[in-house]
Amino acid sequence: MGAAREEVRLALATAEKVLEHLDAARRYEGVVLDGPQGDNLHAFVMALEKLDEASLFLSRHKNGGLVAASAAVESIDALRNDGNVLALREFEATLRGVESVVEAKKGDKTGKAATTVEEQEQQGRQQRRRLRLLASVLAAGGNEAAASSCVKTYRDSRKTDIDAAMASESTEHKQQMQQQQVLGGGLVESRRRARR
Image (cartoon, rainbow, N blue to C red):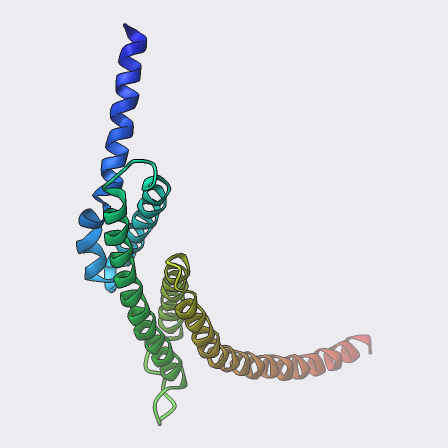
């Protein structure tokens, strides 16, 4: 009797898993169509991952007698494509935000920065995380051309940011070297005096 119950439990669990995959497009449609803006990014990414999982499972079983699998895969793939379009739009919008942070670092005409350095760095880190996540979503969705375009655009935008950061580092390094020379000269002079 215990073995029969276990087999029934396993059969029900398998059936629930199949139904969950068949229902994936309907279940995640709202989250995907809301797009990855703002706080919805992580829910959006999770929904796309679930769609990918369902599509893979159903693709494996659509020729094995699971009649509804073909239609479900088509719905899932169409929703995934919509998600790719929304992810690409958000990638481009976020990239514009990164560019605005770079501009803010340059400051206004008076030379005064628009925000503090810490705020700029925080914004930059958050936006770069979003960009990486969105690019990975596009790559996972099989949209190689969009993912490649995102990576190239991201790399190009980062080059400007990195060049600006390196110029800033170079200026700071020169200032530190000058301070060390001044202090070093004073230290040498004080050692000479101490020896006398």
